[in-house]
Length: 247
Image 1 (cartoon, rainbow, N blue to C red):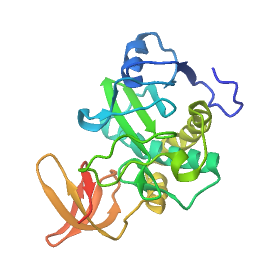
Image 2: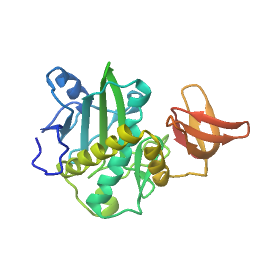
Image 3: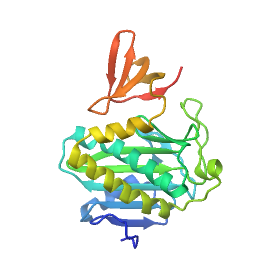
């Protein structure tokens, strides 16, 4: 358990020197967990991103998973993606004292100075279980992917600041608990509103690539389900999941 007085009540914390993947570690430990638990690895050797992509994680970067049991339908669980992005955005601003450089990218990436600083991955490994993995480039950036919409960046190079993974977790966990309680109490609308205030490229043209098609249009809003809404030549299109690019 953290000694941080702001640590959310009823949440456990586990810090490991090394593991293959915090998502895999969380799943292995799930049968013995009694409460929502943050698992932080100071080194991660086999991290995963969306759609099975590798997540490169040099030493000194942030790699953590929150695993918890939630009796909610899948569409409600999926909204934790926005909760996590807002919490991470808030935690990074709180730690650095900077605000102008940070932005959100639908559905859950945090950007810094126009580059990708973090990734967030949601999985439901069993009924009523949600694993939320978060990776942040605190000290080093992975190799650039020519196919990515945003180049990778890291916090130290962009800001000159060195943030320890444990310090970020101390800020992130209470921020997540606060945003999560807002979702439980008031529904998705305040989360959606806050996300739109921080999201990049709102009102601009973008390309959404799904597993089956490519849709180009103006980023109009995010709807009540969290879907991206594009204004296209054929009318509005709500897209629940896609990779985002720019023409």
